[in-house]
Image: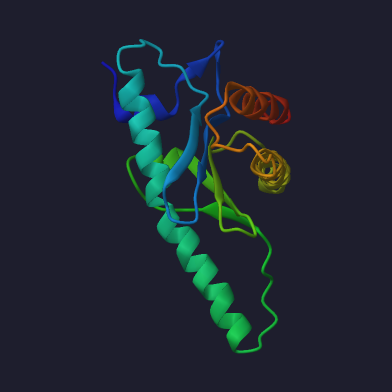
Length: 176
């Protein structure tokens, strides 16, 4: 039987995929790009699996907004609050994601880069944080490069998807 919990921890190439998906969300909350890196064990419901991941990512936008609002309020009060674009782990308790972490990054133009990573893929949390910080920063730079193209018409180009997959694959090998 294919369950929601199984869909978040499916096997890829005989091993569990550390990075389940990546998404770019526009400043208006509209998804710009989504790519899943999991494959269903049974391939019975791949669209349902992707829909679940998309819903979990979309629900995590509330946590992004809370963190951004907190930074803005601290700046208004004159407190020295770091306005770093890397948000780290966003932790909504939704849809059986207790075994996953959602990481976030917000660009200067308020485009959000989100990724879901399996819990416990690194022995040390700081190693996972370093890998995800690097991945999200590089994904943001990939977006900046694409958006800087004078003929930019969205992130739907195959070359953008290939570049995202290559970055994710490079970083997935860093998990130990």
